[in-house]
Amino acid sequence: MLIASLERKLFSKKWLLEQVEIMSDKTVLIIDDEAPIREMIAVALEMADYHCLEASNTRDGHALIIDRKPDLILLDWMLPGTSGIEFARRLKKDDSTAEIPIIMLTARTEEDNKIQGLEAGADDYITKPFSPRELVARLKAVLRRATPAGKETPVEVDGLLLDPVCHRVSAHGESLTMGPTEYKLLQFFMTHQDRVYSRTQLLDQVWGGNVYVEERTVDVHIRRLRKALGEQHEHLIQTVRGAGYRFSDKAA
Image 1 (tube, one colour):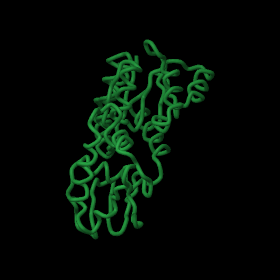
Image 2 (image 1 turned 90 degrees about the vertical axis):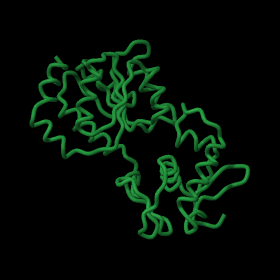
Image 3 (image 1 turned 45 degrees about the vertical axis):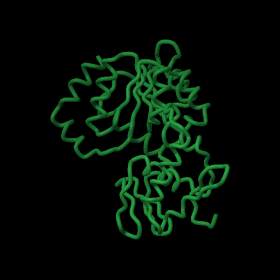
């Protein structure tokens, strides 16, 4: 019934036209053991310009969470092995994943089940069957509530401006060119100022926990980032001997 409902709505002309106005750079992880359901949800979200990741079980889902850091998880209640509800509890207990919003998907309609899902840490609860319109609307609402203050707000330090919405960096009005990794490093630094981060911590936060690269890789990208920032702002990225790096406009 869910698939048939999705098919009717996904390919309607009205639906297509409505989605043209919706733009997003968010990544959504869909964890559901039924491939047709995952595929239909992915089509709906991609038409709304969301990036989608898919997993059929919690093990694969967890690997994607650590590696890709999705902005939201659509999690089916009934999964092989570890259930969705138990997986949600585990994610909320882990500091590295506790802030990722979760929407539970389930055919269970009883109020007790909904309460159980919310108490496990889910941010919302959608019962099957549901329409793509409802799914996208609920997803957008959860993301709005979950987006930390400043994450989508331009950050400015001493004339250095990072605009996460436009994905641009400028210095006193002049656009700066840098690679994607350098941009991620700068965004992390500018939103976590005046704190020292070790190379291992930067690898986890910027590259992802499942990416196995040497710690000296961080040093290479720090050098590239300083070069991209130029003489006016390279001093903002400070080396703390024996500890790591810090972004600050205060003297080291």
